[in-house]
Length: 202
Image (cartoon, rainbow, N blue to C red; front, side, top):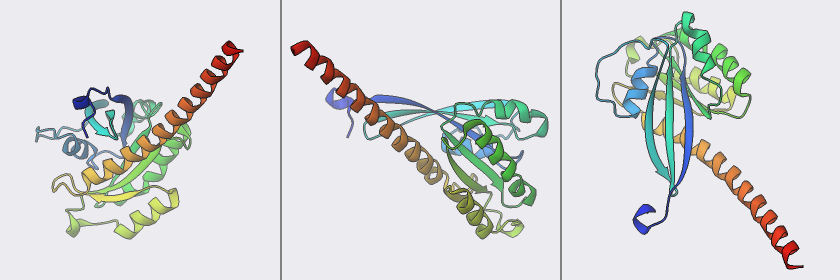
């Protein structure tokens, strides 16, 4: 149902997401596929870039600010500085590159160091269209995600496999958490308001 069509203003949440993982695992390609960026050219991310995508869940507008970080070691300090304040992370490795999978551990440590347990995280094993060059089994990806307690998807930006599903899982988890916090805050405010009204009426 379109709330605006009935004259009701949409609630709006700004959501900061961060793409993280080694260089050349396909973070930029995954992001471009998700936001329907028509630019087919590939340029390695130098430093930081970001995209905006807006969507609606339960008559609430979510404005996604998705930061695309560079995976190169020389940009590491800059990249992780953008982790602060993120509600969600898309952690990506390349299924044809075992080192990128091993380095997920270090990216997770960076995320947890800056955001603790508050942020929602999904793990993507990207480039699943390159089955003939696979170096990391799907089972290993599933096991690692299970150990961290996070959702896992094998994706392909080229063939558009599981991109929308992965982001939807992440965004819906963030929205549920925000909605619960908002409901709790509204309940507290309502109670305080009733107390004030009671005081004024006595």
